[in-house]
Image (cartoon, rainbow, N blue to C red; front, side, top):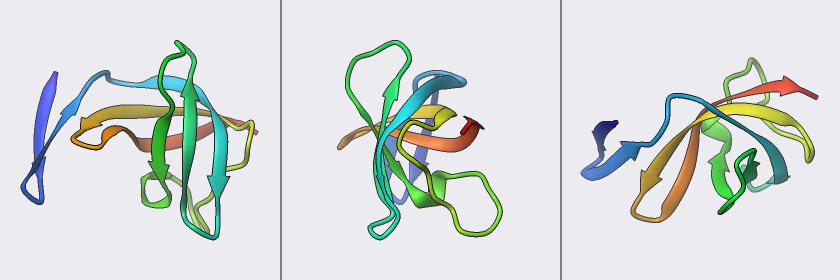
Length: 85
């Protein structure tokens, strides 16, 4: 496990990489949620975490790979890549 301090908030990486499916993503608002392959709570994803060129967005049903971070507000996806669209 790695602990990262970012803007004064401690964030803890839970796993190296995990996979899931996009449950919801609003391109207009720039955020959405991913359901992990293991189940459990949905994971928040912000457009800034999407690893792609140009306009960064996700579609409902996209299979994605990402790192999980445990923040004071809950689980957050980082380094998000689409693996199957």
